[in-house]
Image (cartoon, rainbow, N blue to C red; front, side):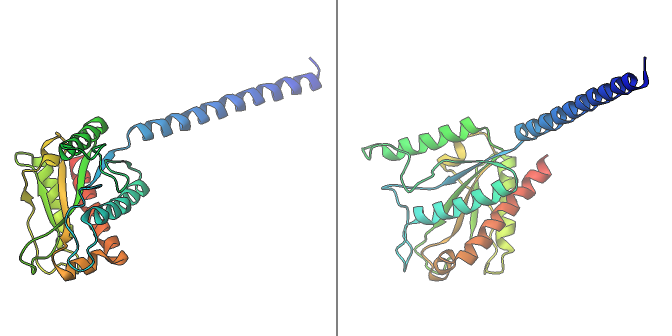
Length: 232
């Protein structure tokens, strides 16, 4: 075998080896990405009310609760997705989930939300609402969870703690048991976050502020992350 031919053989073998190595490296990273994608946790965000069911109204602005809920839900979606979570929304528009606005629309709306939640197999469910009370001095965020669910209680307490620690919080609250369909219709850690009282002018003013909504979303997100971190 002459020198020239021997070099060609060696170069060919080296090229083949390099090709095999690059292929294996590519496959490794491709499989890693696929595995990481498969392991992404799903978060279900539920914007309460919608369509002809606007919920309560802001005491001064008369803005519908359903609008507040959807705006905050969109911000939460963005925050969770930026952190790498898969996010499912029950309500994506101002419309409700009941189809035609005929008798029984509320029941159909809630059943559709339950269907979306249970098909998503989420790590947590967070339903966004706004509060209202005849005593206009009542203020602040309040988190509810279903009875006999330790995971839901832990999620609620984590989020409530973050809400209580916000500079704008004037009175600390405790997470409370709530007998609500959206909490009872699934087996996952689920909470309702009442972000503030639209019956209170100060809370309403805060909830109309982009800056405050950003802080509120960060508090809810941080509380959820705290729960997920401790439950892994």
